[in-house]
View 1: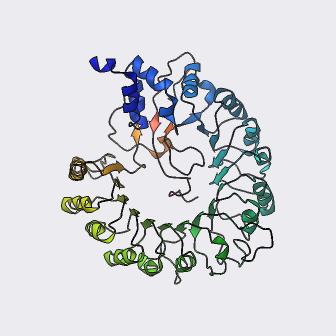
View 2: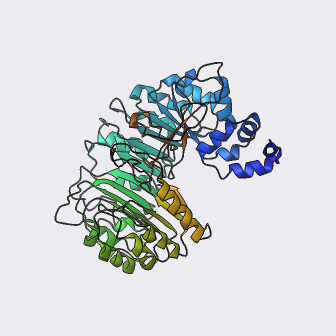
View 3: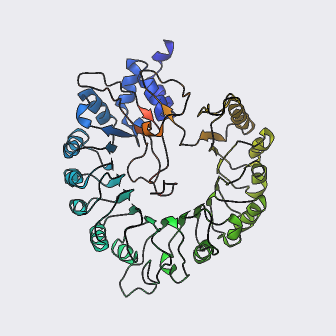
Length: 491
């Protein structure tokens, strides 16, 4: 009880270091912590909420969200009246993700006068028209259409999108049925667009004007695109096609085939973009096919490809200043980790798998003098070798010992984290330690709609009812889908 008498300023300082799950745990321990957490909206900056049937939640629930100044909501399978309710209960709402909504229901989006970021995913019915975007043309800065069947003509889509003159980020992921010859019209009309994610499954070879004309008329502005993500990519390209992308700094390519064709098209991209600072490659040709043409300007590199230790030596020679490395090879990582301190001495952030890596090799990461974060991509273990189907999605005691030892050896300069795909579930007043994997259908996706950084999301319980307490237990997860600059699910 003596701890409760500490100054409020000290507790608020402590709370700033807690993840969302621990903040919610602390909120349920006593009325003082609950009051402190609810009255400090800064502690909840970036927090978002997952709702289904918003009308069932009580006033205490909405009052808490309003105190936290929640600005981002994910809404599942709702009705038009739900949008009106959100507008009245959450006056600061500016980010919205709609899952499994129909065309008739999304027309009510016009009531959200502050909406800036909109994501429509997993549509349960085809979208034949995009007229619902017209009232939002002066508001939206980010738009995502992911895993949505578009039956409207390509010209109709282009007309609707190009009206969104304030748009800075556009993601369009579909099944390949949409045929748009070039992106020049979009890039030419949306002068503020800097982030673009596009499904490329329908393209076999990119036409000369795919990204616009290389020779702009007098007075025309060059495309401002700085981040480009290509999904299901396997299209031939020439250097002339890529000339309009002179400002591109980040490229992410998710290849259509894990067994590629004879030509490595990525070579053309890399030789045409000499100032690229961030590259993410998933699938396609082995690293050896393009390692020798990586631009020296690279600072961030994500590799989920087939690679060998000698390939990393080539990468080190080509990009000596690399600061961020996400290494997820198709084979084992056991022989790669010990090479990193020598090959990439300037690393600041590292994401790796640890299974198969010896403790001695893992602790060699202390030699990276600039390293501050190590992300473990496979923080799970099987506690009983005789029961291989029993998997605990939490760090093993061995991994915890290794990470603690690494922190000690670096005087706590290096911090370790788990991959955001790992899940913590809460189904009652207390948060138990996770013991078994939660079925995918039960997981709650934690991201503010269309944001470039992954965020956590809060889900109230299914049994919330009017008149009940607003001490709602969430299901928490922090995945990286549907955000530019991260690895999305291919749709």
